[in-house]
Amino acid sequence: MYIHLHCYRHDPYTETLNIIITSNPLTLNDSLQNYLLSPTFLPNNVWKTTFSPCSQYLAIPKQDIYGGDCIVIIHCQDWHTNEKVDQFYIYERFACSSAVWSLAFGQRILKLDFSERQRSTSSVNRRFDFTRNLFLAAGLADGKINIWNVESKELTLTLNDHQSTVCGLAFTSCSMQLASCSHDTTIKLWDLLDDGKFFGRKESWLKYSRLGNMYKTLKNWTHVINTVKWSPNGKLLCAVGPHQLVTLYNTKTWTEMFNFDGHLHNVVDCAFSSDSALLATASFDTHILLWSTVTGELLKEFLHIIPKPMKIYAGGENGSFVRSVIFTKFDQHIISTCDDNFVRWFPVKSAYRTGSIHRQTQNNVLCVSTTTDGKTMAVGTRTGQVHLWSMSATCQLPSLKSFCRILINHQYSNIINLPISQYLISYLLYKDIQVK
Image (cartoon, rainbow, N blue to C red; front, side):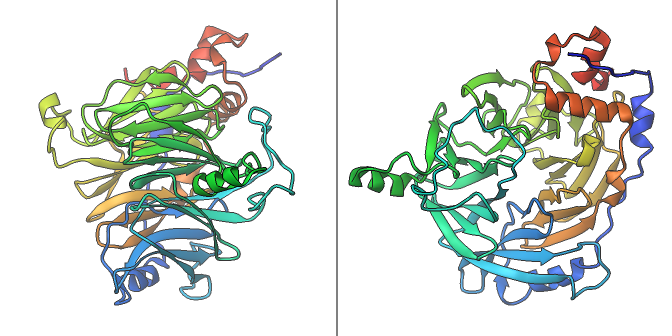
């Protein structure tokens, strides 16, 4: 095996800060606010919003005037259009039996080798076909997970095995495996492409009807799990929760790879970089911590209060709980939402900065999500609003050197043992971004 990567020394601080961050409301934002604040709906906490893989659908949890919970699906061919009507419309409203706590779009994309997990692909033993079309999963307060076919607008499947609120959902990027976590202290893994293993006897059919296609339950805790996330390559699963919990699993063996120790308060969200080599975790302790998923090292921390607060303050009611975290396209920035009513941008690849380089005021902010192309951002609030912002400025191409790192990390999982120089290995492991 030969890997040729020409390395040159440069200033990562200068490279990152040369990108000018702007966050401007989109033309469609006013139309969306008028709809969400109409008498049709009650104000509600928007704990989660999510865009579809094609970037054309946005799912928003709402509550109607009669107290009924639902999910509003917005469709738009071009979120940056200047036309307020032609491109933007309400695609559907999916009724729910209780409040919506988590959302995830899933779509099978034929680009990975699924040999690590064998499935029955026979069409004879299949009740539901998840091999095509776009699906939306919703985790509800009553413990149910509803899954809709977005194209047909039909409720395809309801998974009933959780005993309490389903507060986190995540699909793999292309294989339709679903991870769910709940206040019942468990994580469950579902394979929506494999539903033939319980067929043959009536008793098995009844069991299958109750469980869906669940193939594993992780129950190593006595407290809730706040959220779960798959890595983009599907080889890792991260679970975060109270008592500073951050656990990283190997999804081939389902063994714990790392239990990250560094936060001082409940951990509520996490995000992987596009090459699966970095993990960002957000906590009520006012910090985001950035970890290496290869070595388990803490690479850097991002501060929402400067100077860094003392442990006793960070671990209590500090007024700056960090609620959500995401990577921008090409992993050049991390975006967070915080209870101090700011949305912040942090430079990932600067070894000289832990504070934000841009922040935008947003009252009652709760969550943030972006389209796959990285150009559009949705910010959910406690008042039922979802604001649409332009992110085009953060989609500038990174250096060729950074591209090479992303591609190599995506291709090879055992970076440490590659037959290349230690300098290159250190670069592939993101040692260059550690704060000096």
